[in-house]
Length: 82
Image (cartoon, rainbow, N blue to C red; front, side, top):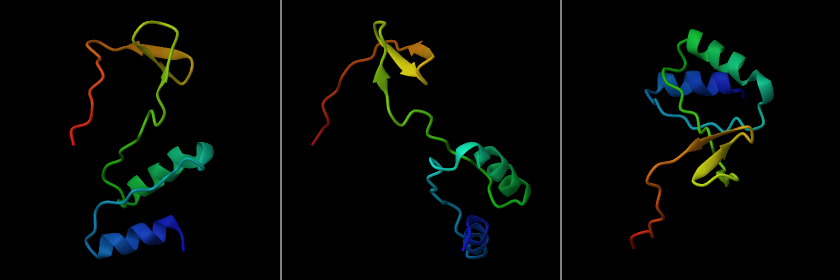
C-alpha cells in the first residue's frame, strides 16, 4: 500500500483531511507533493515549519534553521489555563 492509493481511497469515501509525517522523506517531498497536486489528490498543504524552537544569541530572537532569525515583538510567557 502506498500514499497515492491511500489518498485515492480517502477521496472516494469523501474524506478530506490527512496528516502525514514527511520528516524522513528527504528532498523528494516537493516532487511527491507536486505529483499529488497535479493528480488532484491534494487541495491544500499545511507545513509545520518549526517543530523545535531554539533560542538564539540575540534578545527575543528565535533561531530558524540555525542561519536566520526573526525578532518577536511583545512575546511573553503565559501559564496554561486548567
